[in-house]
Length: 528
Image (cartoon, rainbow, N blue to C red; front, side, top):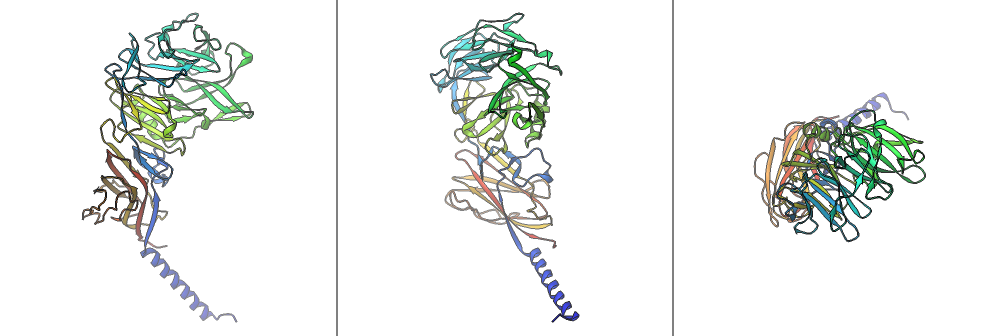
């Protein structure tokens, strides 16, 4: 039997009443949301309003690992006596007798492999800015200031190789690379390059007029090998980078034979930042440019026998472009790959020989970060360990210990602004950080609402094995959990608004800190 109009109206009224009651319950009932730590990394590309929830507005001295953030390790002393001033170059050599670390300082080259006093190998040089590459069991070095002739190290002694070339002044060579069993050199201020005979480590160099191909001016700044899969297996491409950003790609193994050497294409990238701003990552080339830190593999796509370029800006693009505008002319830009730490670091010379920071990416997850407090003049991977050139003729070891050569490591992280997927205004009640704290810690926690300054903050002192009360006031009262306990107590985060951002900061000296997630509780102020 069909319901009468009166029955239908009654049923509809009951349904409407239930919906209104449910809406009131949704509005008035406290809700909880669990958010992972910002493992998406430091985002300097997107606006605050459009930043993904898993990213960070600030991420200093935290490493975005899989599923958590971990505070970075420190730097500690390794070798001394590399001159008495700044160590501006580090180079790696292994001729079969083991890993060796070669350092430059005070107009001399040193063996800094062993901890303690470095051993002088050769002296009397005008500049300490050397770059080198190992080829045929020799370390081939050129001076980046074209102040000294090329040098060669065989594991015991340093000698000057007998290079020559028609019209070449050997002391003008500032760059060296190797590609398909040949050494390649280039001069200061020139677009052309010089190449050696197959497997030669001394002898005649032949000039290749790359200036006949380059169209944007400038000078040759780097030569790298780019390994990609061309469809029938991997192939190695010869890539020449100009100071203008013009990028010229060749395929082949003999620049003197047109049948064995062919131009693949010319492309325009942003201007590179220094001769050391290139790093090979498993065949890919990462380039430090004035716009971003660019991956060749992600930028260039092979279509048939040609390449097409498309630059997609990374999360580090904002930081890279800002740093380039401010510090682009400083010496010290360098990219270094650290496989054991699953990271690539981009050294940024804020003030040459004074202050440096490192932008970086996790090579597993791609998440970016920033390191501060490591004033590295240069970097070098030796074996599986990472080293840096420092002031006072010292070489330090990275990723070791819990301080920066005795100085506290300050970790700071600010979450992206988050409305918890609910755009309505909310009465924010509490937050709860989920961390692993293995010792005594003073942790400053701040928060802001709706893109305001993080003006509400308190500092909590945690002592392992006992709880410490939270100060009464803006945050109310809570107590920390026991040593290494992940789940800390809730604390008050009173305020009204749609989105919230939280910042954690601490000075570390004796342990690493893991941050897993943050829990939030709030009440919606407006209904559906």
